[in-house]
Image 1 (cartoon, rainbow, N blue to C red):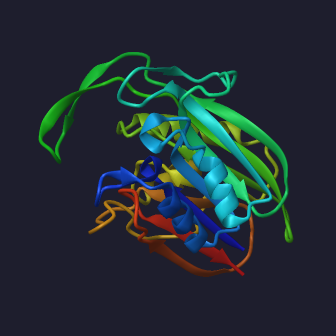
Image 2: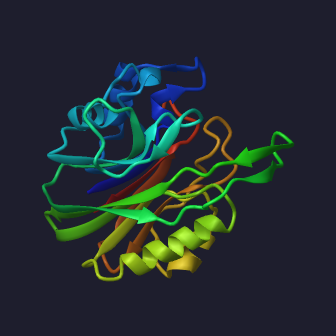
Amino acid sequence: MRLATFNILHGRSPADDRVDVDRFATAVKDLDADVLALQEVDRDQPRSHLADLTAVAADAMGAADSHFAAAIAGTPGATWTAATGAEQPGTATYGIALLSRYPVRSWQVVRLPAIPFTFPMWLPGPRKVIVVDEEPRAALVGVVETPRGDLTVVNTHLSFVPGWNRVQLRRLRRDLATFPGPLVLMGDLNMTPPTPARVTGWRPLAGGLTFPVDVPDRQLDHVLLRGELGRVTGTWAASLPLSDHRALVVDVG
């Protein structure tokens, strides 16, 4: 069974600053994941040609089940509101998706605590101050019927604000306490090892530098396990022709 998590940057490639839906589909097909967690996913956004990127990915990997959870309605960096799950068809949305080649018994969306105010934040990389209006964050939970039995899979994309992402991860750990195990948490957690394992108490299944894509120097993307799943037979960070992240892949055999 192959698990993979990939922050897709809404399908855009930094190399040419374009969203090519066919290129995105090919990248998903090349990952060949049985269970795939995607972050920064567009639906009905002009910048990604009004495509439903979850549906594109599901077709490319041959998914039996898939689900998209919008975090915001509107366009990131422009005008948006927090998504409620009741958005009308055709509304531009942005969020996370979980896809599986195995049937999914149930889906649930968990809304994570958001910073309720704007604030200035210093970015050491570009050496500038930005005003942060933090986007809402969510987690998507699917109970997957794998050949090994039921597996609870969680996908999330946490805040980039240091400290606040830990608050969200602690809340998520608490909210997931009643879900059956084994449980795998995948996603862009916007924190480096060993912090996610320390906060959750769960075992990392993969290690690898995932950001930035060309010359990665840190791991922001993670696969964590609560319980027992099987022996890890391979893991790597895959460089694909889109996004500013590499995909993190784990084979359990």
